[in-house]
Amino acid sequence: MPQSMLSNPGSDVKYSWFVGVPLVSGFSASMGSSGFSAFDLFANNGVDFNTKVRNLVLSTSRNDKVAINQQLEIFSGGFKLGDWQKASYFSFGMYQELDVLAYVPKDPLILALDGNQTYLNKVFDLGDLNAKGELLSVFHIGYHKNVSEKLILGVRGKLYSSIFNITSTKNSGYFYTTQGTNAIYDQVISSNILVHTSGFLNYLYNYSGNINSDISKKAFLGGNLGVGVDVGLTYYPQKNIQFTASLVDIGSIKHSKEVESYSYKGVYKFVGLTPNLTPGIPTGSLTNFSDAVPLDTLNVNYTSRRSLKFNSSIQYSFGNESNSDCNCSSDEENRYKNAIGAQLFVMSAPRLPLTALTAYYRRQIFEALEVKATYTIDSFSSKNIGFGLSTNLGKVNFYILADNLLEYKDIAKANSLSFQLGLNIIFPEKITPD
Amino acid sequence: MKKILAVIILVALFFSCSSDLDFNQVNDLKREPILVTNLGSFDAPAQLFTTGITESAVTTNFPIIKIFEDLYFKESLVKAEFFFEFNNTINSAFEIKLIFLDASGTKIDSILFDVPAYSGLPNVVRKTETFDGPHFELLKTATKITFVVKMLGSPLAIGSPGSLKLRSSATIY
Image 1 (cartoon, rainbow over the protein chains, first blue to last red):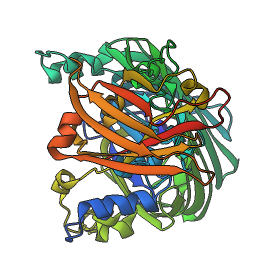
Image 2 (tube, rainbow over the protein chains, first blue to last red):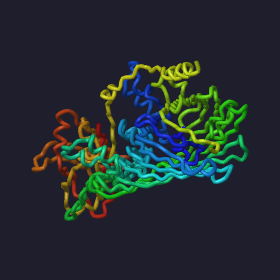
Image 3 (cartoon, rainbow over the protein chains, first blue to last red):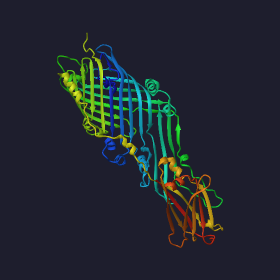
Image 4 (cartoon, rainbow over the protein chains, first blue to last red):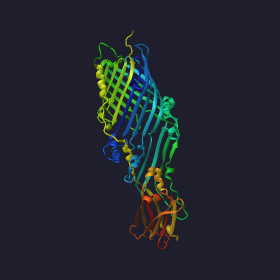
């Protein structure tokens, strides 16, 4: 389907032209949480919520995280240039995307819930605070071409328009309390926390506008802008063996509108009062904590990088060619009834990359129906079974894919869920001369 | 037939179940952290009391509660425990008074300690004062604290050994 070009601009997708049905050509959503599920916190089971929160904090680590991604394709289309032997393919479109990635702030949570009385000698790591989120729209235009009989190369240029952004991923610092000598405790806080935001400022102070209108304007290049590029390839070492690789979202966004950042930086040693009883010698003032570790509000520009994604796959196709009465498909991979393969996905993240390794089997069941079964091991689950189908009813293409099917028996306990679906109108290209 | 089968497969994908969840439980969250920190300390050598001076009084700012309010406990400070430890190695008894004052210098509260003279054996006096309810609300209005250290008994000879040490901590609920 044409949407595969968004994960690999060098996909072997051919068409005379296509158009995605506006707002329904591509909708995808995925959620992953490692270490806990919605059921662990919000189950209506009579267990006290505070007990559930404490159990969650104790059972998770600072590397556990919640990741949410949602994409809605607003419009898309594409067309072919050139004849059937030397064709180039253009594609373009716009989509809205929501990304959230938040790590469990374990040590600050323990401090906020329990304090430090029972944690003497523990060094609380303030760098556990690590989260980012963004709502943006993306305008893109792509190009791919068979540069040889075996190799297809593609590239996609992107223009990002950020609607809302919050980024706090480079925090550090510590807080500890140990038994002291001259004082009861040795206690120090060193804080280096910075939270960048953009797009929220107008709504914080006496806002009287129309938020829907504001968001629409920001979505259509009125927000904070950035540029990016995707590159990819498909290579056939043999006719029935396919290798693909791509890098997606090599780009960044410069935030200069409606920016407000909050910094909490400084060092403070809690020595308490130290009166000097020597007559005539003044006692020094106790430094105010808020002077030593001030909470500052800044209005400075900042740059956020898009999460870089790497996709790669290898596929072996076999079986009789799909339908001897109709050589309907111009895509090499769809000439065979069966295919098995493996896919690797890696996405950059503030700490360890998010990864997914998938094994799949694809089968052309009818002339117009193709199904795919997958098994994936990823950062959130080791029992991710997925299923997808793509069907062409005349010129109308409908596709749906869903992962983590085993979790659907109780989605409240799911550690990850994802699905995507869409509707396109595709005019296949002519693969023979007139 | 093929198209009907395709539709059946599609419909089958839309069935799922979920355990009963209640997100309103968030309102039940109770944060009751207990924070410990230093309240104050001093180390007064015996020489301070060999020049005929028998009493020393020092007033200093007392922003201890404000420090915790600055952090994040603003609305939830309900109780404080102050722990005091005096270690006296001077051959004289002392009476120490801590006086809490508000912004206008008016006394809000005071704590009295009697520390015996050093006689060669470990001489540590410990005391915990608890402030809760209205007593704690009153303490929150304190902005200064006066340390009054009064030596009981005869003035010390020059060169007298020892010191009077205070270590103290606060436990805030």
